[in-house]
View (cartoon, rainbow, N blue to C red):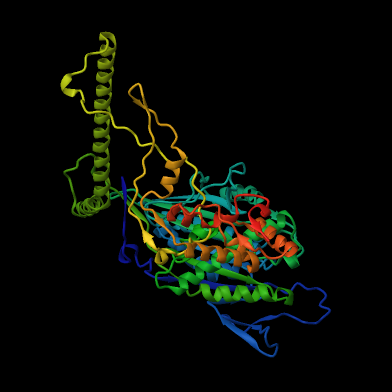
Length: 604
């Protein structure tokens, strides 16, 4: 089992630095307008080896100045770009550290030319790979104690899909992160390399698999982000058999596009949207890294930023080559690219050596674990302490949790078995009872109490219609109160059984005045009649409807009768004076409602 250990600067000869700032270089493409009818000239001009100026779009009389690590003018060759920006970071690969070089800029600014170049003027990628093999040969000649191996992987991000360029038939590949927070892609083809010529034969066919298309601004525009990964593994042949791994990321980013000028439609428009979205996420990552304060860095919002996580704010020595165009039609693209480059140079990475040491004693001492030399024993002690620390916190909690889950599952299984046993016993008892027949009931368990009679529900009975208006308040005008008269219901018995027949009319009237009975004075009754007569003769539609059982239709009939035949002269009450006060109070407005036509109740 291999364990990753930290290595200080002294152990690597001072090759690693604790802090490394992103190095930013700006390269200006030559002016390509053959016929400049407007005589505008370039909008960007170099002021020195590290500074440049661009016209201020808000005020044409002013210019904006930018300062970078290096500025390459229009006449700068590919060799100069490689020697001053790329070559200084390559030795870190052989010391177990990562490095990243990527080209950024708008479409048509020369990014692919900077990274790939041509057969006459090779770009950064072929020169960097050639230099890596040159450094490996020098190290192998200096010391025979270390063995070096070089391999490559090549992929593109097209429409937010990771595609393997060394295996064109592959589908979208996932992006994963291991326990040491290293980004890797499962299923990505890794091809070992033996020489630069071998790399050339593998890389050229894979480059043809990259997606390109023609737009109005570029005849061969890259429609995807291409990433070439060069992996260098350095293994020690003698104890303690250390192994260091360094990775070189060579990234050719697709350029941001203005669809109004490129004329993209259909599939080209979709590709442009994916490119601009990933570059916008890249800008958000840079802003979050510069903001600091522990804020969230949106690496996972895009697959491009996920793969560049180690290059921006990670552990790699990073170099960004920003390509810009001098023509005025590229002005806003150039202005945006310069602002992004100015923000990117503030990012700080923290490189470290990735080293693994074998923890097997047999591998160290030829099968004799007792022959421990002091350096090896110290390494083993550190490994054991690291393993004890790892097992002390999260691993122990995980094991305890697994143990608890196993015990819970065992208890559940035991309960299920007991339940099955009880069910089988109950089934046997039931079968035995069915065979033996019904058993006599135990007298002690017999209930001698009579059965409860359920009270008949009254929910289905029709409710008596309620009064729309409240009855007359005549309680204060009662002349006399008689003693209560109890009501009885006539019941008949036949053959010793009670017959629940209907109550007679007297019983129903008694139910209306169930508790007490009272009589009204004739004056009170006359006053009520006068009030009803007054409402019938002069009352409005609303007042007529306020009378009991008089709705809108009857009220309109009364008003029509009154207009045709005149006022009513008398109200005749169908209730005898001998009726109880409770009946009169509940039915006082039935004086003129129960019979039609109106002439049968009211006389005019």
